[in-house]
Image 1 (tube, rainbow, N blue to C red):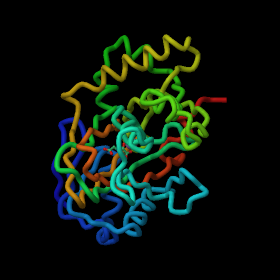
Image 2 (image 1 turned 90 degrees about the horizontal axis):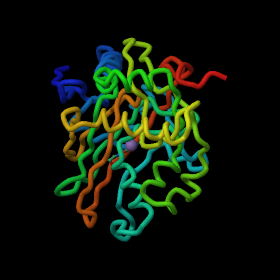
Image 3 (image 1 turned 180 degrees about the vertical axis):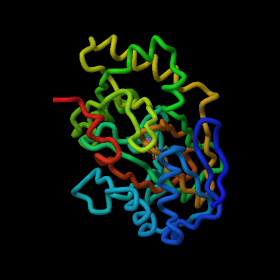
Image 4 (image 1 turned 90 degrees about the vertical axis):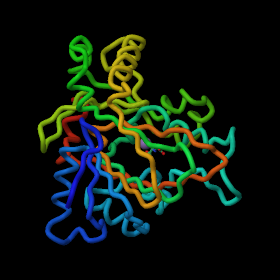
Amino acid sequence: MDIRPLHKDFGLEVLDCDLRRLDQDNRFAVLRELFEHHSLLLFRGQPLDDEEHLALGRRFGPLEDREADRPEAKMTFVSNETQAGVFTAGDWQLKQLQSNFLWHTDSTFLPVPALANLLQARVVPSAGGETEFLSSRAGWRDLDPKLREAIKDRFLWHSYAHSRGKIDEDLAKRELISKWPPQCWRAVITNPVTGEESLYIASHAYAIEGMEDEAGARLIEEVMAAISQPEGIYSHRWRPGDLLIWDERAILHRGRPWPYEEPRSLSSICVSLQDRDGLAEMRLPA
Ligand code: OGA
Ligand code: MN
């Protein structure tokens, strides 16, 4: 497999790799190692069908099930397409997609957050609609010493309703969103394979355990602003058949706007964290 860097801090494009043929030469073990070290992997021209996409996800761990009552929910469509056309301004589903424009880590609001997202482009718009990434490892490494000291031994509270409430209060009140109670995770986590530390923060983070609400929220904002500087960003311009896999423990991402009258559709599979990925150490001790 040939590789080439996507950004000086993180990310690789993997060339000459057919994601349907990973049994050859122990290829998955190689990919998993690249994932642990480089946090974001790009594969172009991989038109996986749903079953192949799901099978790839299962190699990383258990598939996330956001709505246990919907068997197909392991595959999520990040899409503005409807049977009649596309969602339009005011539709809550469009607002939900626009909530992804805030820097975030997926699923920090779930009782078991995500290890990885495997996102594949199906339909891309003529302009815009990029997905942007930054390294929360580099962000932690380069963080101002005062902020490092302030956040290093902290635990952050995360809530889905919090990030959706920044976009629209009614969106935050929908059952789909409000049913998830807040979760608390260590602010700085360690990758058990590489020993590298990263910030674990997201648009969902709203308070810091043991700190007064406003002071906690302010610190979260300061850290977010410090780590999301333009030079740290890799912006991905999608082509159909592109597949990106990222490590939710070490990456923040966000979507970008596009002309909403055009369809944009990606298929997404999240894989849940396990203790071998560092999950137990991320929890607030009882
Ligand atoms: C996601 C996400 C952003 C985008 O799928 O988790 O945040 O660009 N997507 O659609
Ligand atoms: Mn996301």
